[in-house]
Structure formats: C-alpha cells, structure tokens
Length: 198
Ligand SMILES: Nc1nc2c(ncn2[C@@H]2O[C@H](COP(=O)(O)OP(=O)(O)O)[C@@H](O)[C@H]2O)c(=O)[nH]1
Ligand SMILES: [Mg+2]
Image (cartoon, rainbow, N blue to C red; front, top):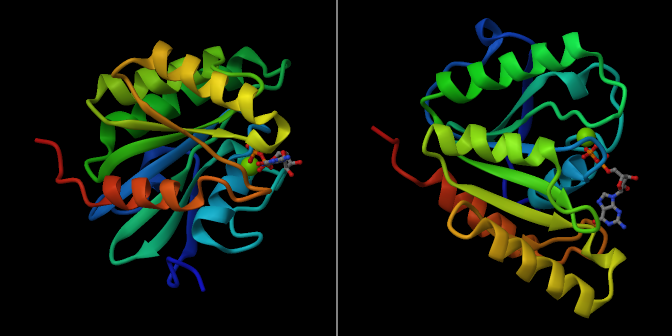
C-alpha cells in the first residue's frame, strides 16, 4: 500500500506558463542524470514505474508535476549531466530552474538525489544555490549506498555533512535495498507540512 494512495502524474511543463496552479504545497526533486532520482521517487511513493526509471524521451528535460493528494505535490525537475549538453540547452535549463524557484509560492523544500560514489557535482551545487537563494530547506538522499561497504558509506555521509554544515540535511538511501525509505518519507511529509514562507 502506498503512503500516498492518491499519487498520480499531473503534467509536464517546459515554461512557467505551463506550471500547474500554485496552491497548496510542493517539494521539488532534483538530481543529475542517472543519479537515481526516478528510482528514489518510486520507492518513496511506493509504486513501481511511477516516475519512469531511466529515459522517458522528452520528459527528462521537463518539469514534471505529480499530485500526492490534498493539494500536495512532488515535482520532478529536469537534470542535466551528460557531458555533451549543448550550451543553448543548458541556458534554457538554467532559465527554467530560476523561473521555477522564484515563482513557486507553494514550494516548501528540495530533495537532491546524489550518487554516493560521486558526491557533489557542479550541478548539485547549483541546485543547492537555487534553493538557498529563495530560503528553502534542502535534503540530500545519498543514494546507491548498496554499492559501497558500510564503512565507506558512513564515511561519505560524514564528509558530506561536514561540507554542507547548515545548508542541507543528508541521509543514506538505496532504491535497491530500500535503506532510508522511511526517513525520506518523513522528511518529505515534514517539508510538505511547513508553513508558506512570507
Ligand atoms: N544499485 C543501485 N542502483 C540504482 C539505485 N537507484 C538507481 N539505480 C540505477 O541507476 C540507474 C539510473 O536510475 P534512474 O532512477 O533512472 O536515475 P535518474 O536518471 O536520476 O532518474 C538505473 O540503472 C537504476 O536501476 C540504487 O539505489 N542502487
Ligand atoms: Mg529519471
């Protein structure tokens, strides 16, 4: 049984005019391509194939809105990170992200999905900056922890937490072993329950 039984895809947007009405509360999910964002969303919502794992042509470049019921939303943000993204595409992406973070009154926080073997990339730092610039809390899922030995995984999390200091919280996660599933869901609910910033 899903923790969000009413979860459903609403729509994809390529420009602010296509965003869904800005009411209620939403949490944005960001992550470099292939970090494991779609897999993490599927585990948190507890539905196989909810946010399609890997490449749904087109969708990966769009802002995808999902309803969680009760005017609460999960928003799957476009990632980049393939070496050869054209400058023009990257500019469009940066503009769309800036518009999204500045426009959304209903935005309560960001989940950033990071591959534990890669740690923070320039993309991740940009996303943390977007959230911080509009005063939003960020939470990092250090995913694919199943790929590392326990000691290595613990060390990676500690190093990340030291680097982040107060800018974000972080936890271990694995879509494969489902490590961190409950913690992630609790954090998502916590963000969705935050009051609107003034
Ligand atoms: N071992 C392992 N593989 C994962 C995990 N999460 C995702 N993957 C794999 O990583 C690849 C990219 O995952 P996907 O969710 O599509 O990444 P996205 O591009 O960020 O949405 C796929 O082959 C997944 O099966 C995880 O926690 N553990
Ligand atoms: Mg994906």
